[in-house]
Image (cartoon, rainbow, N blue to C red; front, side, top):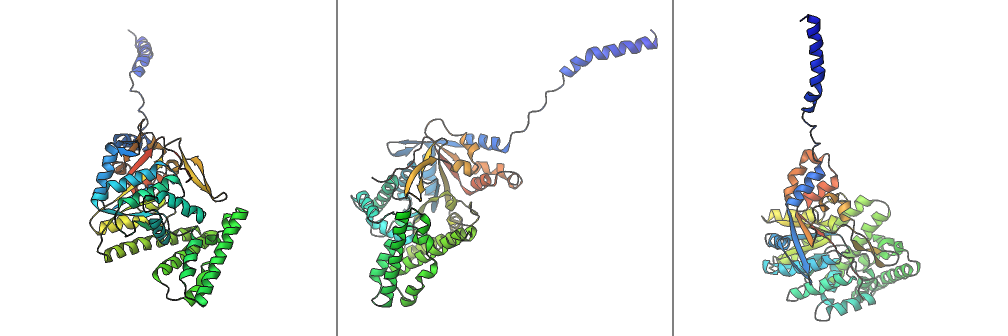
Length: 428
């Protein structure tokens, strides 16, 4: 066979075999799973059912929470405000953890108003007395004019015997200044101190009247008055009684925090509020220690306050302090994030109408956790243990991931998704 013929046959053979050779090439590799997909898969592997029927919680997820609380000195619930099922959850947790030594419930209201509500909520008529108190002193105390929130106060107060207050208020006071200033003017000594206290109460009352008539929330005393408004009273009354001193300190800090906010100095406002909150927790713990007590504390605030590490306003808040205090004592703090389920609503305060209105639940999305919602169980609530997810968000992945997702996975120990939850309702 000639050389030219051999070359022709070789070329024809290659053309004939080429399609079959290409057909045997391996299929292109599938693209690697995204971080969100891997997190969702890991979340599905570490999910636990929580049942909520007739006001009672049960299931493997509930058991995990109770066991975690027993092993901790602080149990922190970071919530989406205005979800009706969350107060029921907190109340049941508080009762379930009583045998482990939980005696105090720290809540997102001011120290002096927490003491007041602790008294009002006591007894069989606690819910009725709370409703009467809020009607007599509008617009009430943040969140607790909602029916389910008021029920929590009554249940938690009834769960602990004794006269020592159960509620630890750790926050500033936005709406209760008239009530606090009324008590201050009654306790102030006659003379310049009484006159200065009367003037402050009149200023606070006038501000509330303006808010009621104009529906302008900027007119609230807590936002419109500067902290210097208290200077005359403090100069005339340098050594007030402890109750008045705490109320005056709370009001002054509130005014300072909100004036920073009004001036657009948001980080400074949030930082000052967080510092005030942390001081109040340390004060309560010191007073308990002086009484010979060492109570474990259930804390319930908005999610940003309860996260371990820097919160969403880039300040260190109660969640960081509780975690460090527990570590210093050789114990633990357990951080639980609770959010309304996808497609549900929560109650949102409208500062113009001074009432609550339903709005779509949005916490999961705002914290970059929408991908984890795909791991929710079809029925009931879903508890996702976030601790096994952390290796997927190491320092290298964290640089490329949603920073809010990273903050939540490392800042909370578990996520409870309340599928089918409802917005809270106002007290009748």
